[in-house]
Image (cartoon, rainbow, N blue to C red):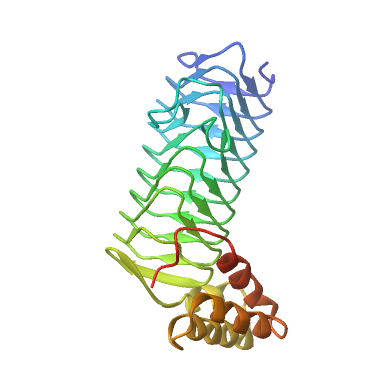
Length: 262
């Protein structure tokens, strides 16, 4: 089903299963195969390939030569009809790749809204990405990775499968993550280590000086007071009673992941 207000190039190849929303623009030589749903006012630039089941929200802009909704690279994948969900208002630049999930994982890959994926970014199977994130050129997410909101990945950075990065964290360019990055924390190096809190990012997003001071205190409890993780959580819980902004750190540390960057 194609909405009558959509503008589609004659050279585009559109599956009969596709659903194209109002005022969508599809440029030359785009290929859409299978059940692909595209929300209103989304723009697909030339030579993109979209395969379903893939569900794309409103006002996304997908640039040329991107591959969206392809079957994943996991050797266990046997062409099952897994899914990719993309929210609204994302910018997906040239040569980006986003793969569908696996039946062994969530069965779907989920990308939130208002994200920027720069050239050659890769989102592997079963990833879950929040909102307002930035992935610079060649940022690479392995399978089953979870990313919070307002996370920034520098160019050529990469994260191990099943890794986690908390909201408002900052991953430096060329960083290699084999451990989790808690909320608010900056990580850099190969392999990456914690190197402070994302003070500039927090200030830009409206965190008060008192909140930033509390987050810095929480960072010190985790990294510079010789506490075990269990001891740190107890102290962070006390701090969270006064500052709600500390609670995401507590919740993140309580979950069993790959261990946190040190």
